[in-house]
Image (cartoon, rainbow, N blue to C red; front, side, top):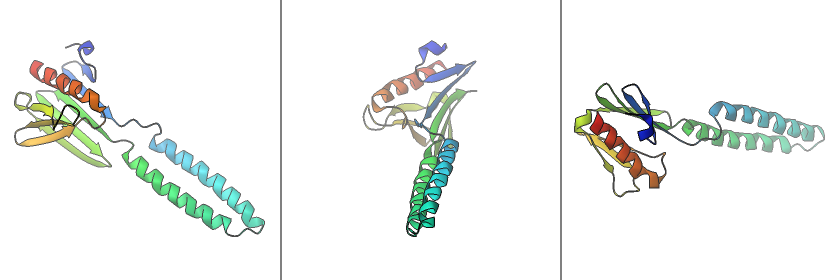
Length: 158
């Protein structure tokens, strides 16, 4: 199959891959550098105020940096979340990563059902052999039906 047939997938040889990732504007390493520079600036300002006799500015700067650090850690933990769906070597492999938790499920292509969970805008349920996985979290709801059709078309051709 050619890559022009697929909107969401990448075709390489006999394999078809769907990479569905969270839309993140800042990577965890960029966030670390941003936090480090924020610490330097805030601590510098706090030290100047401490030096001039305003003793409470520095403890509040520490409190602010702890709160921002916790928020950054929570953001960074989910920045690399995503779903990988691959049709290769006679198997449909679905890999989910969410907050550091990794889940991998394999299906035989001829025994897989791909359908919306509840409606056309709900998550896509991939099921077969007594297992099921929900995908499509990182695709806009109005595009999930198109993604499901694309996966079904690839499964039929496999």
